[in-house]
Image (cartoon, rainbow, N blue to C red; front, side):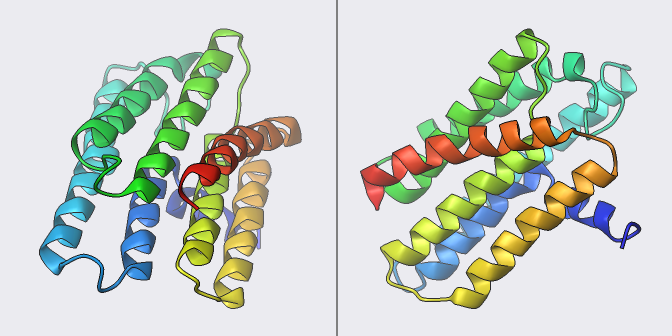
Length: 201
């Protein structure tokens, strides 16, 4: 099991969470959008939240500004979090506007708020698990979508919570975070999404 757990840290890395959320949203809204629109938004999300951050991570690693894509050192998290917050803002401004998709608009707004809180904590030398932040955001959003569109899927929700536990166990087993840091990250990701649910659910 110890050899399998690190797998979940990579599959559910924070840079992939936005893509998972967008794909899930369009999967639950089949028939509401045409295929061209769906593909366009998924590609935009991939470019802005995955390809651009990966390129920046590679540059930062090359310049010895960060040790790895996992950014284990709290002092090295400032620039990646600033970039992440700015990229979320770009999606809100250019892609998932309030009139196009309020569900995704509030998801990315919540994600931007969570990233900003994590960034502020970095200045106080406080480290929050970005993996758990992302998992909490994704979990609330997915459950919100199921409720919003009247879809009952107990197996999916159960699997989602199982993944939460596996990611937390993975980060703890890899000694990337303490229990306090995992809990802090989860709370930071959870609260903004829960509050913003009231605006679209």
